[in-house]
Image (cartoon, rainbow, N blue to C red; front, top):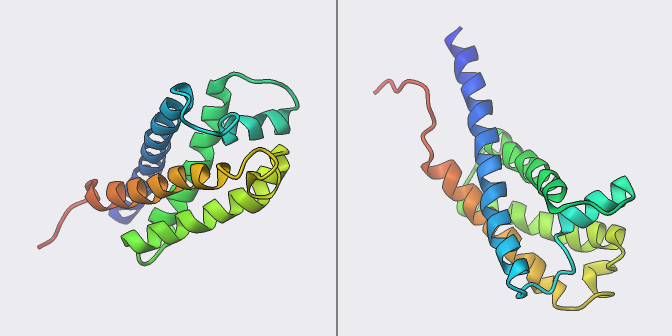
Length: 151
């Protein structure tokens, strides 16, 4: 019975880390977008939601897509990666960054690596992925694991 309780706490913790990472990265990126610093035409998650749903959407819908995506990958990291170091978190972030450049940007109509919009999208899209890796590692490392300790 206790193993099932700890298992449930493990999932709850992993999902909580994912939501935390999603909200932290979104706060930074939306702030940069609103300040006019970001060269991205709009948040990629919002643009993706608009492509999928076929219409213009408000920012909160994009945030839901962002939270879902980031939470999914955070749960994969927390629950299934046997080695959860900073370098492993950055490796996952790097793979996801390459995926956005090669897969998602073309789906959005921005071209490979966003080059149909601007070459600035390459480093601009790297920043949230670096933050993802850093926040993911930090929250996993420093949030309590829960359960009882038997020292």
